[in-house]
Length: 360
Image (tube, rainbow, N blue to C red; front, side):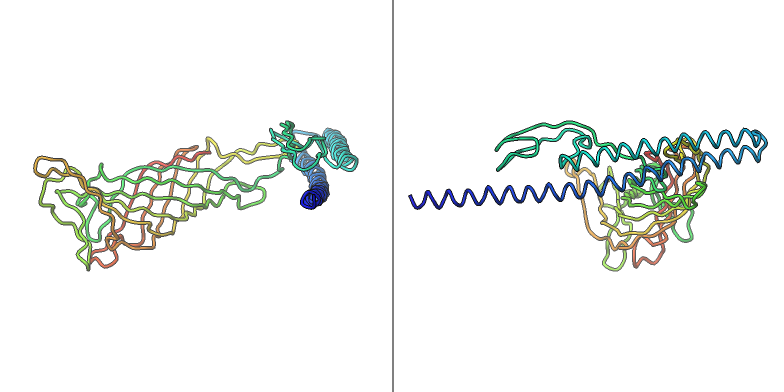
């Protein structure tokens, strides 16, 4: 009996405490939601004012160009001012109604979006879900479109030919197969407009993986002798000899080119799709590792070897890069300022040329 009383008391305390915690959560949610709505209300007013300002500037521009008279301009400005004043009144009324719902009910059901699965536990919630109750709630949470998005982001892919620039030698005398040596680059970048009212200059920066492959000529492979890394002839006939370096870098470019300005009542955007662009800059990062893959025949059987070691390669990667193109496609080139190997007598630099596709 005593155990039953103790258990009942503990259960009652737990239920009360659960209710208190839930009430506290609802209070915090209400406070946060009111703050959000007030901020959104201020932003909505700002959006309308910015849109009106932009329209007036366009009207003034037409007046200076002579396409609109002073009288017509005044009428256009008056109509625009009346329109956006009504927009402000309507937007404020929407937010005030939502705030009133929260004040009266503790929750604004008009702000819920998507599909949410709600589990009731310990007590009835604000929608009378019982203990262990399960409910699927659907709705929509409206968001205010940002008037000006100065920074955007997208991914990119680059592929092409890879080779080595060796001091005192031309690429025609390269120790590596031109068609067989290739590179690939995968990255994600952010693009920020430099000037407030123009998009002809952007800064592009991000993070990228580089995969630089080299295929030696004349049945050779790389060998780390302890002091240097050298190309040496393999005693068996190599069907494949491939050396690869993987890098993680931070690319930074200044991007030049025209863009289209798309204007609406509540937002505007600069669009660079189907436009000429030119980017120049560089990159810096770290060498993630080097590896070598060999295929050959020994005693009548095909053999494969994957050799992964340091090969005396430089740990830090930095270089210059540029691209020029139209729309999403560009010709892309990069050149490592660091040498591939640390202590070799002859300086060798990785160089790449290919195509770049921006996933805009």
